[in-house]
Length: 320
Image (cartoon, rainbow, N blue to C red):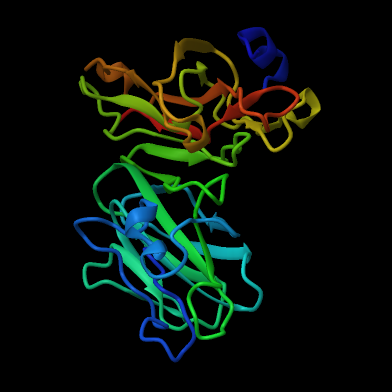
């Protein structure tokens, strides 16, 4: 279990619609409904036309950035591996805030909050996401379909994003839009289910702001959590692989720490959340003060590392 001593030593689619062969009407995809997004659960997804049970392909999502500033843009790549033989496929995706920007083989809804394939000749799709001006957490949902191309739907297989391809609900990919004065440092590491938590601040760190807070989203639920605060502005990130946590980095020194427990929820969907209110005094002497911060949590999942922890990205906060 992670403790302050350890850290001190470290210093450290709907689918897809129905993706079927070009002879079928939905080879150009289907967009999630605004009232009931098809990317959320099996009863309103690919199963309406293909096999009613998800399972088969594995859904992989790669993001250029998970923590952004308002209106910033990043690339997203969604891939379907495994499932029905062949190279045909499709996806549906939607986002809770901001806009998806179509790539070469995708198209979006009029509002820009949902996206699907524009033809069924691929199982990898790359497009862009533009963060909203509004700050706070964002969730990206997606479902993919692997099509065998025989002109029938019963040989096709589909799945939601998540650790288990047979899960009847989708696991969101978390992003975060920071307020001005707060910048991300490095990246977080995945838990044993493959989920990556994000860490940000929804309000600017202005002097006299009683509403300033720090929040980590996508943590293991009901887990021991440690919020770390450091003061070294130019500290290099420390690779925690040498401590049994490969892929994890410590992005701050340890000047102070706060312990707590994340909120309860589904562990496989990383539904834990941890929020720390930090009211900022109105003292003008504090203007320009900088600190770094990061959150670590105990990971009790079956796929946890030898040192069973996960870490968020770091944050650099400058009082304004």
